[in-house]
Image 1 (tube, one colour):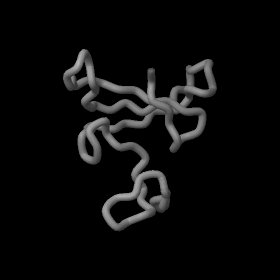
Image 2 (cartoon, helix red, strand yellow):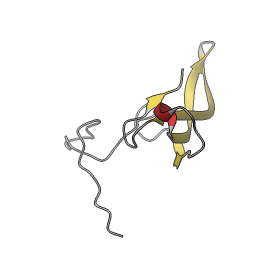
Image 3 (cartoon, helix red, strand yellow):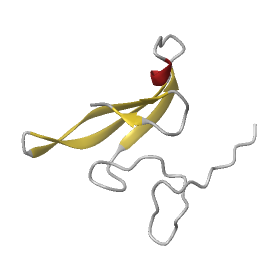
Image 4 (cartoon, one colour):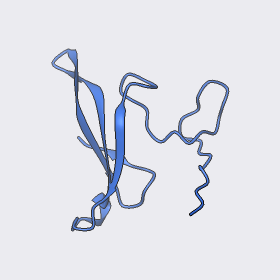
Length: 83
């Protein structure tokens, strides 16, 4: 297998316009942990076939709380945040 990292223009970093960054944390760069992408073969909703789980901080009742977050998408890279 040969994998070539894509150069995307989703999230620039410092003086690099194209990066392979597909997600930034709620607090900015470097604030999310343990990103894992899963393909859910049992998912009946095709728009939620690909899922990413990660740990991040989110505003809750006026303060920052840490917790598990999940994103999903029909096709790999461009994921949508859960509500």
